[in-house]
Image 1 (cartoon, one colour):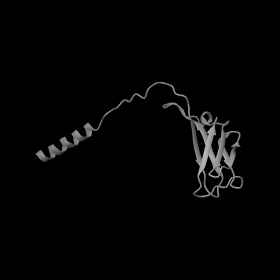
Image 2 (cartoon, one colour):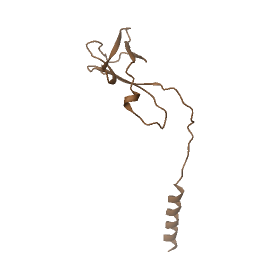
Image 3 (tube, helix red, strand yellow):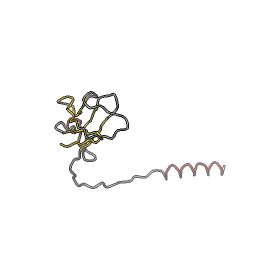
Image 4 (cartoon, one colour):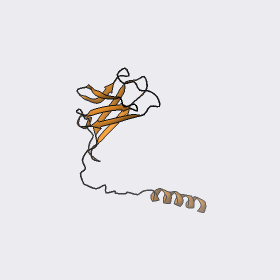
Length: 116
């Protein structure tokens, strides 16, 4: 009986000691939004670059408001050849380029410049 009581006490202690609420203050200061760039460079496939802007922590995410439609996206390879990527459509913040216009070669270094 003592063994069972000890086990129940131990289980009760473990279960109640795991409950903890932590309040973290992340600061209320507003910061300016930053560009967020997600790019895919794969040999044999079209080049795609998604450009958006960051939002403050805790704000709702609206993809229509975070996308950057007026960005300038320039890709440069290790040899110095540059290509400005064009928007794929007027309503989607994805900038593209075909492999025929700017071939991606494995093991080559590429530099991406994005401004808005």
